[in-house]
Length: 254
Length: 243
Image (cartoon, rainbow over all chains, first blue to last red; front, top):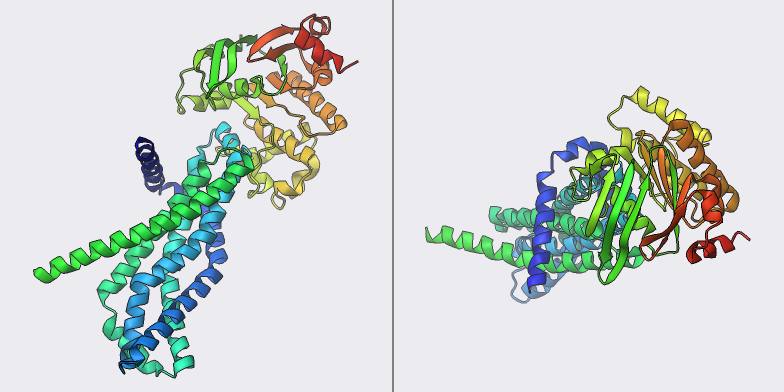
């Protein structure tokens, strides 16, 4: 237990260190922009695929249920609200964690075990500011933008799926989106995207930077990143939903 | 003395790697540390630049006692001591130019270019000068990567050069060339050099003085001539390879 608390403390310290070094992004702007463009381009196809199919799967499932009650007219609203609040952020975040997170961990881990990080330190450069901070912010900001973009794509995916397979009227579908999807749903989706993005950025950078023990260590770092990202995304999803619900409820009582 | 280790101990878990290590290196001297794998040669170099700190004992660099220095305190020591790693340790995702300027970021572009040109000539890589911006480390041969890493370490102009097995993985001809380079850099630019190596033949040809390590302590040391005539078992085992 003590060891786990110590480990959590190390994670919190590392995260805080990366967070407060945001101004360093301007100093290392070339590296940041390179990483930002690289992560963005590399993840775009994954985000589009995840977004389209998440929206499509959810729309088809909702359609099957609503058809029995003759309530297909509200499909657009229910599907979009459900997808952007819960299923969309978590599925897209999983895909991004698997791709961007694993790549960044492996890259930093390899730098560590081949002495690149130590060599830079010996040249009088702080390796966290030089290597890790630009990567953390590039992964975090990209994940936030990609998650929001993926959610927009999931709405299009849902619409296309039910339009093509069930002949649902697209105008009716879009009309219901505006009626059912509240500001609260959008705020929840964006909050989750921000939190998942920061979590992914932190976990992949921390595990990569802490890699030890040669190529086997790099493999272990990538595995840790995959597992920790997914577990922490699920936990964060639960707590964010819970807190937002509490906030909304307290608003109702007033 | 430029560098002095006084009874230094270091343990990793249950394994004691340095076991009362004591030696001194004078200014401008080329000092070789030889020994079998795992006897603490590389670990001793890492102590000099603060990548490791001793459990016990004291280390002096240029009259500064550094054994209890913090990361911040080591900033100026690292300007004084350049470490050439066993692996080239070049940043693969950065161009050759970006790798070279890492230690001289504070200089003007003109000054950087001037220094790079001189240093590339010194390490025999002048042919790379026109392609520094386009090429990346993985496009170079292993020997070229090693020499580029040496150039990167030389660029900030450190007073002390630390080489961690600089010829590992190189063919005998390139290894000999690297040793000649170490000697010429040290003598031409007045650098103090410490070289960790297994290569007794080149060490005897290059060093001013040598030390043989076993189980984390110095078991023999002297000039190349004294080492050749040594009766210490570990030294004789290394000399047997020359016969």
